[in-house]
Image 1: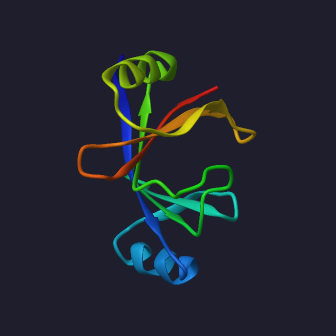
Image 2: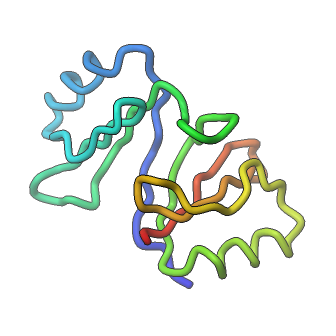
Length: 115
């Protein structure tokens, strides 16, 4: 299993203002589901930040997202380690399979793969 991308998720009550702020740093909107917006650098598309008001299907908003090439293998490894699963492995309507886990620092990590 390999990590493909890591994206900080910034909880925000000021999404549009944040979009404008990160635009000053060269980021452009590449995804917007209403509750989460992802901004990326046009010259380096893997450089991303997501702004979210809440999570659509999970009880908490994650602090970061890690895209992996095999989310089922990641889930098995994390579960077997005894780490706290915060949101179960499931397919989401927007085309990802994901779960949330709490890291040793208490941060919630959204681990996902695209369907």
